Image (cartoon, rainbow, N blue to C red):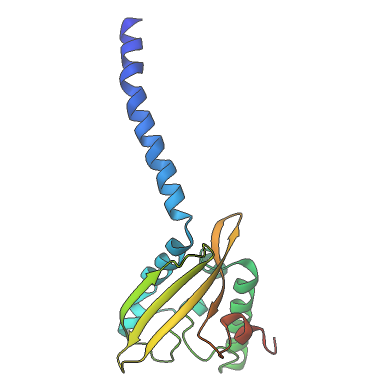
Length: 165
């Protein structure tokens, strides 16, 4: 009995540390900036000229990791349109880099004061500086991208995908 009590007392602090680590990891993974950072980490190859399957051609299960349900539907509809027409439909650029041929330098992801926004700043190889604003929404699955603003006076991703669909 004494051995069991001693084991329990020794294991209790270890269990507490592991629980705290799990809680901390869950909190970190649910921050809006973490969703955007993971998206750019998974699709960084686009910005260095490697070939692969673009984010806009990913299956629903992959898109739902990053985008809310409505934006996921719009992205899928545009991909289906491209396949059926064998041509560009509404989205004529890479949505993450706002370019048809992205080569990106100095990419920085920051969270401004509003919890539901994330900024992505980068410079293209031509020196053009871009600032994309990610509008985030909390869903039952965690934070997801609701829209992307490409700058003042320009259509957002949702507006580009929603027109004519």
